[in-house]
Amino acid sequence: MFLSVQLSCYPLTDDYKPPIRAVIERLEKTGLEIHSGRMSTEMFGEYDEVMRVLSDTMKWSFEKYGKAVFVAKIMEGDRRPR
Image (cartoon, rainbow, N blue to C red; front, side):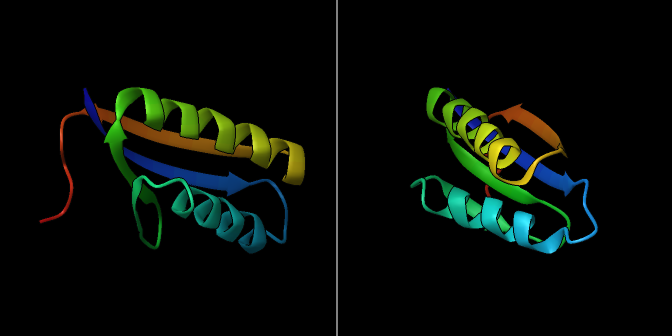
């Protein structure tokens, strides 16, 4: 099953840009198709891999940078930009 995910990260710190950049860089190294925008990052791939990457990335972010809010919109199907 193919997933399309729109993910936003809101670090609960005044210096919020470095954690956001680090999350995006980590996602880009996963091998999934990643498209970064100004307010969110889109991820595309097979269900099990996307969910594993989401879980690993959020856990890593919490451990490295502390509190943050993640908002994810997850849709079954291929919504990649053409």
